[in-house]
Length: 265
Ligand SMILES: Nc1ncnc2c1ncn2[C@@H]1O[C@H](COP(=O)(O)OP(=O)(O)OP(=O)(O)O)[C@@H](O)[C@H]1O
Image 1 (cartoon, rainbow, N blue to C red):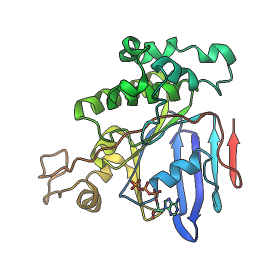
Image 2: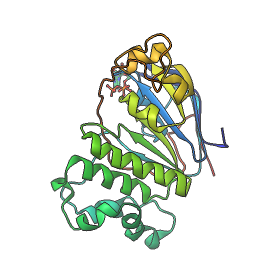
Image 3: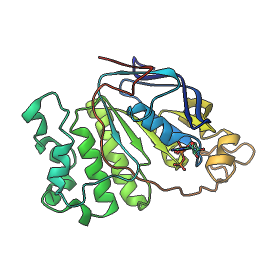
């Protein structure tokens, strides 16, 4: 792994006595695509909130080297504002000041948004809103994008377009991505490395292609099974369950929550 842009060590978060995250270790290197998969209630959203500084960990450390921006679950559009205004809001913490609020680079990166720039964000389709949410996060000029449930409620073709954009940003701009997904198939296909979160603990981690062949992962997260001798990509019989999810809004800056969190630049 390249130098970590985000490093989480021994992260423990509790809600009113219930432990949501229990000693989580996780890292994303510069320019890496990393997935975190897990079932409902595994602790994915809790991890996202801790990374964004919205939750204070009980123990452990979060170190962010550079700038982290978030595309949170649910997109969180400002529905009455235009697409361009939504994007502009993403630049509020950009250190470049007024220049940092120039939205034109986003239309170059995500050309589909150009014709929509004066539309009310609330009138857009889910996929269009998700693209605005990604654009808004990019306004912070992040080193890492934490994308919470990219595919939620979106048609497969739309998801493919969004994944294409994230891949391009990764290969051409070196943007690191932490993809938090219930749709394990999508996450394992898109990312190089992956973590499996189960009831607040990292149960498995490794190369995504290896995890996609792991019988435990296949049975629990890919909605099917691999027959003896058959790999997922080698024609083994696999039933793939469709998961869906989405994201929206942004958090910017090399930061994280109080307590045991460090931001290093
Ligand atoms: N505000 C809260 N107060 C108490 N318990 C909470 C709170 N938020 C989450 N939890 C609990 O913490 C655990 C982890 O929840 P979290 O929302 O992080 O899981 P998740 O993996 O994101 O689930 P989902 O995919 O359903 O969104 C669950 O047991 C959940 O019930």
